[in-house]
Image 1 (tube, rainbow, N blue to C red):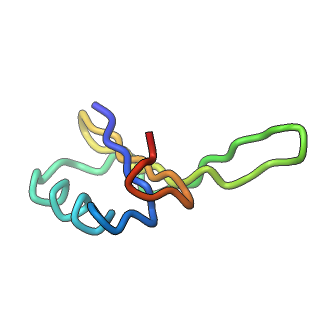
Image 2 (cartoon, rainbow, N blue to C red):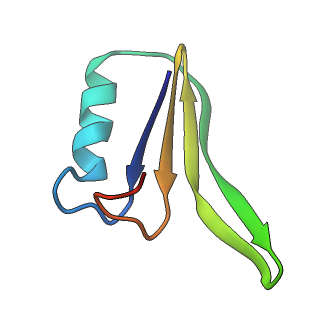
Image 3 (cartoon, rainbow, N blue to C red):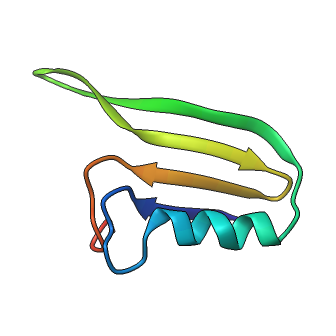
Amino acid sequence: MLKYSGDTDGAVPLTGTMRWIDALNRTILEPWRPYFTTNSTGTFLGGYIEEYDGLTLGTVHGAGHMAP
């Protein structure tokens, strides 16, 4: 399962999502790591990913509530 959040979301903050995931007591398989996107002008930070048992949490760097 993938859950993602914008890291500047004021309506549903990332901290609330992280508390919800912590309450699930899932095992962290891979701690936070960055991911990057590339286009014709360079490589940019896309956000961060943390992997749990059966769940991946990703952030979308610079996005708010309308991350999709």
